[in-house]
Image (tube, rainbow, N blue to C red; front, side):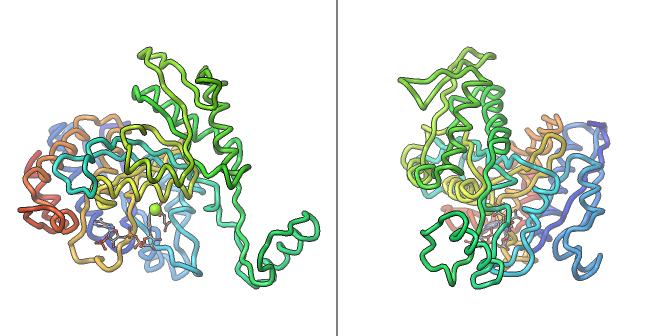
Amino acid sequence: MPDNPIIPFIEGDGIGVDITPVMKDVVDAAVAKAYGGKRKITWMEVYAGEKSTRLYGPDVWLPEDTLAALKEYVVSIKGPMTTPVGGGIRSLNVALRQELDLYVCLRPVRYFTGVPSPVKQPELIDMVIFRENTEDIYAGIEWQAESDNARKVIKFLRDEMGVKKIRFPETSAIGIKPVSREGSERLIRKALQYAVDNDRKSVTLVHKGNIMKFTEGGFRDFGYAIAQNEFGAEPIDGGPWCKFKNPNTGRDIVVKDAIADAFLQQILLRPADYDVIATLNLNGDYISDALAAQVGGIGIAPGANISDNYAVFEATHGTAPKYAGLDKVNPGSLILSAEMMLRHMGWLEAADLIISSMERAIGDKQVTYDFARLMDGANEVSCSEFGRAMIARM
Ligand SMILES: NC(=O)C1=CN([C@@H]2O[C@H](COP(=O)(O)OP(=O)(O)OC[C@H]3O[C@@H](n4cnc5c(N)ncnc54)[C@H](OP(=O)(O)O)[C@@H]3O)[C@@H](O)[C@H]2O)C=CC1
Ligand SMILES: O=C(O)CCC(=O)C(=O)O
Ligand SMILES: [Mg+2]
């Protein structure tokens, strides 16, 4: 990583216009404070989503220029982008992950002292979600109800595959859920390696494999196999749970699994039992917002999309359209995504400054509306004021 990298950013739709400039200011301040001018980021705006259609033309949502820049500069950051429900364009966020093969969606969930939480002991929550980011029902292979294509697929399923269980064949939409061994293994391998590198206690494979036996159940089985074949895990009490010694620390890492519905209640009732999580795309989407709520909401939940070559950092939340342009929302999620980016770049001092200044701003109760409405004695500040409150505390 050079001392003066060029980092492409996508501003994002909706509240992107509010949070992205604040994120850049906070990062610039942290880098300046940490390195006294020796290191500096040059930000390069690239376009996707609604802003791209204004610049490149009405149908150009994800220009080739943008994909080329994200590849050329390797590390980048993005704001949220809108996806219409029902019809219209398919998710640009998902398209970006597929185009760059960003197969790990990494979403750490930890508690910051002072953040209002709906649970009694939010400090027990310290989980790192590895969400498979390129396949599953998110692959976007589906056909609208009553369309010729849906009818064709249903006919094929009934006539050639012996499928008798489509309850309403005349009016069913059809979606396909591809889950591969390669896709599952590469994601679970990263989760296991993360547990080794970061001295974590366990990796839980979260799935709905009792119902979707070959897709979600397959994910679980691929996970246990890779733990045993590549990390030397041995079954505990006959399996399927297993464990292996962390070669760096000598401590045990337990590999276990949980069925997704039960898992969603366990994370509320017994969060300390869970550590690193490896899961499929849709489960990971649900789990990351549910867990974020337990530590203060998606306004403060960061994330990264990572491949073997590239990394695109992004907030967990969406475009929150009702708040767009109001300078109101919490920029914390994108700022903490940038903190992950700095850590990924090895700029640890600047990353540490972001964490400490956010802790101080929250500790001083200088918080945006989402925290203020749940916090006694809070001073509600705007999105940009929160950024300034952080910078003043670096
Ligand atoms: N990666 C991405 O780019 C993502 C894009 N999206 C897209 O975003 C659009 C809107 O989705 P929607 O389901 O409304 O979800 P959003 O995440 O945009 O917003 C849901 C609610 O979460 C809260 N929230 C979100 N962001 C913040 C923030 N920064 N600070 C404080 N509170 C926040 C608000 O709660 P409250 O109302 O209680 O204040 C908001 O109404 C959709 O088109 C969706 O597809 C969604 C998720 C990820
Ligand atoms: O792409 C979208 O619009 C939604 C994506 C999403 O919810 C997520 O990445 O968590
Ligand atoms: Mg989501």
